[in-house]
Length: 438
Image (tube, rainbow, N blue to C red; front, side, top):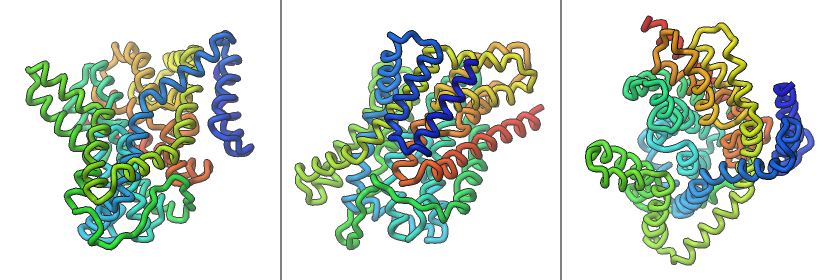
């Protein structure tokens, strides 16, 4: 009965948003409260679960998204995105620009969390699509595929690192296996799949304002790349230094502080204000106006993302996530397949890839004690399952929809299908590596 209630609530949520055209924030709020009551949460605790769901979701994302939006708008208005697009076109040619975008997402995705990378690369995607008259989804989806794969499969991202520790896997081996699986997953779900999406219509309402400037008015190549990709450099350098100074606790603590996405984005905004703002002839008040406009542009996106956390919290507080996970204990399936299915089911219910992976790990771990399973492949199997079928209860779904200006239907057709392709290819890669290693 619990699972039927869950499916009914998710179906109602989809219908309210797609058929009835209810604002997603209101739909999540209404369905979340209804689900809480139907799933047995005491009525006096419903509001607390709702508030916690919104607070926990926004608490971990709001600073990064807001600062990312500010940086993105400054990168676009200063002409840095245009300069980067020109350099990429000169190196790769117009014919291979989409592959260049894929490679950029791959490199940026190694050190950066998905949401940071998304906000960082959006102005570059829009600039390339605008300048070379390439369809927006066709241009951007391969880059998003790269970011998603790196976030779900590979250390040093939160879920893979936690899983490596929980299963006593080897982080270097997991990273190597993950790369072997990630590359075909990115190629197939990115540039190749994007070939089928050239006719998808995009009407972005929060797109960066792109004004084509004369080359002489653009920031320099070094300024454009360094200022735009500074969070990548900060996190990569501090991570490397933390390995070098691993025995010096005080230095490691300072480097860990600098490597945190919030710190890295804050430092980037301070530096970019000088390099792309004041240094390009803008007054400080003008740069602050750019930042103010950026926040206005994403106000509704923040509300939608926050509300997507309501349903996840309701399911956690009601214990449904544990019921889903425990249900898989009775399935007689190969361990790697069972881990993937359990995680995929939790991903469908909870939305969050990280929470789905960590919840599944807690249930899968005792089942694996009596079975010979490569822990490195188990990490990757759960990582692949955690990316399965992203839909309306996933914050990344709404980021992609709103920034790329898609209907809910087209977001399912593009983003959701891309994530599902990655997940299935990930499982296939894990099973192939397991067969080779046997």
